[in-house]
Each structure stands twice: as structure tokens, then as C-alpha cells.
Picture (tube, one colour):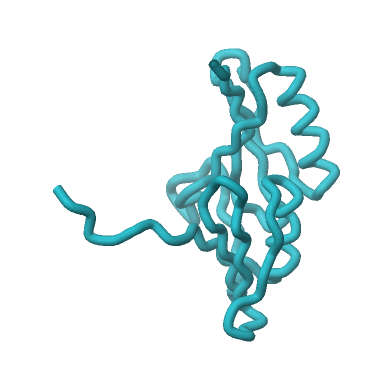
Length: 132
């Protein structure tokens, strides 16, 4: 079956698109760019990955993790944090210094991931991925 469309972006609503784009640029690389002279829209072209975009959302409300009954997380981003727990620990230290906060890191030996919130509350995971 042929595709209907090509994937373009993951777009995150937020109160300050420039600040959140800078956070993710420090996490995954790339340089935030404003498009079409719209101060409420910033794009981050992730090296070797998808395009992340950030749009200003007046009255933004952060998702409530892990609630599903009200204001659910809706989606989250997974990042390869390394192949070992030492690498995950180092990545965790860096994302926390950038403004992330821990949402869940219990039973990480069973789950192979830890859950964080970015500075405005979007959930994301640092996943332990064994590389071949």
C-alpha cells in the first residue's frame, strides 16, 4: 500500500517556543530556527532524526503523567540514552541540569527506561538501548 503522506514534524504546544526549542536542542542537538517570521513557531531540525517544532499555546496546560482520566499525556518522546545504566545516569544528570524533572525511574532494571518531564511538563523517556 502506498503512503498517503510523508512524515514532517512532531509539534509540541508550549508557552515559550524559543525556550523549549533551546532545551531540546541541548538534549538532541540541532539549532532552533524561526520560520516565516512567526515568533510563535520554532523548528528544530534534529541531526539524523525527525523535525521537532514548537508552537506558542496561550493558556498552555501541561499533561498530567501518568493520568489517563483527565488531561492525559497524549504522547511522549523516547530518546536513546545509551547502552548502560552509567550512560543513562550521565544523560539524566545532564537533562536535569537543563531543567527536566524526574517523573518515574522506579523499576528501571525491569523497564529499561526512565521517565522525565521537560521544563513545561511534556513527558519524555531516556531509554537504555543495547547497541549491536
